[in-house]
Image (cartoon, rainbow, N blue to C red; front, side):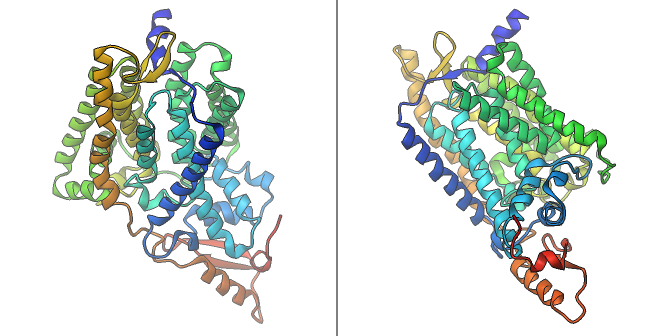
Length: 463
């Protein structure tokens, strides 16, 4: 057990303290959060995202928050499990006039993504001392090609971004109580919003083995707390809507296509390859993933080798198991990889992280602290430093085509109906000579709707 702990230890390096003033760092994070939110909002073509209410954001989370007390909604499952953060988003939107619900939910989702990008930027500092590399990682989140279809500017899919952030929280070694509290909260909220975050338990176990001191494992305790809350709701919940059956025979090759090709070719490029030959795409994806992870393991230092090993285990696990349990087979056989893109997001971002750690990441100084590649004396260190200087531009060149081509696209909410128009029509109905008790408002995708009482539609807001 001791030798295993020593082998795992480089996966969790400590970082040097930032030399920049805290005020500058704080302002940088604020600007980054705002910039990410604006980038996310700009990706939807057609009707702006802030004028539309997406899927369960309206029909479940906002609709139930508008008609039930918050204590009840935070203990109510949907499809058999709890989604805590989307529930909190619906409760927050209910504090505003009903006509503003779409804007609150959309901007809340976009700013939530911005906060998670800033958190990943901060938490990955030990593995990626290069600011440029961490910027590339953050851009890889908000510009993720498959995200434009369903993952942006809403609360219902925010837990999938939290999934990836929890991965980094389990790798991060915060120095102070504030950082440990943040890691605890992030992992707890992620697990309480999406039970599949429990697939990160192997990483949590590795952390406990490598860092047995209790103060080092706030993120692990957060994961446990979130899963316990999730479990308490699940065991008392009525059966949810059943997911269609999906066999492993379809999910395994889909992993190589959607993850192995998707992170480089993007949405349109992968769809084009899918239309030409699915088998060719699957084989190409297997080669790409194998080459990246093997190259990182061979060329990188101790941190990169352990990181590549972790991603080799977790990336397939975090795609195949959710796709299998949630019956994503029909989406995987669809003509576009954008459908069900949330199942591939975490795995794609893990592979991108491994690439960045391998080419620009940290080396370990005596005592296990991470330092920038190339820092220190020695011809070998200086050579690695020069190579690392080219790494960020090279990674950008690989990722940039898909970011540009797939930045802005049409999706299921681009054609409306707009939420302000639906609210105006509902108010007209409620003001009629024979007003109904309940009124239906259309949301997105087409055919979705939310049912609200006329008393709620006419009310300006409720605290």
